[in-house]
Length: 335
Image (cartoon, rainbow, N blue to C red):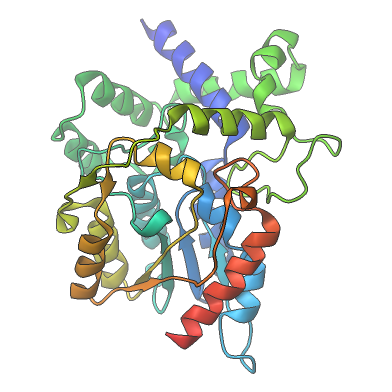
């Protein structure tokens, strides 16, 4: 049984870490760079935010022209969840209690609304538990067991958290490192979709940030997945109690530590909207009313985008991302 668990952990984590970001290079990197104070702006969301918001460009244009450049950190990451960000943020505050003081947290609201998940919603995506597990403590595990997730899901997360600092986890790391070092042909074949981008097959108008694939094979895979998951029918409207969502919990956490949350309407292609809203779309009007009641700003730009602006149908191109970033900075200063 132990061997089966070890094999499962190794297989899933090797694949995910080969594609995504190591957890220590995510929020821990921000903590490490916060020598005297935290960032002025913290972008929180998925790879859609990573692609759409150029942190260097935003840093130069966020404040008034005669002001110093802002400190901007873009933590948009593919397959990240609201709970993963919330847990990692809690950990970061434990390391630097003043990290969020005076910080504006730009929270992704792709297509006009953020993820509507409550505690019973998705905590992490399959193969991406390394974005969540390092930040889960006993209290969060107890909370997870009180949700409506399946027994299998609860056992899986518990095992992963329990083995993070034990010999089994170190075995997983050694196996992964051995695979990378020895270059096993079998594993290379299995992980071929995860191969690094080369100059020959790179898409020059996509930013390689937050796990965004910029190679032709990766772009084709994302396009195919997006097209296959969509529907031509108009999405139904979901009625969401925003006070009961993880987004509301994240807002409260940021505000309690001296920061403020601003929602950003990140552009989405029509194909991505059809996929994302296949099971229903949260009512944008109800979300707007909730945000207004909580005195939360929703930043929108007046830019228009079409499918050609999304090379893989999900992520905004680098050139249009620059346009969006500048328009976002303008919207912030003119609010």
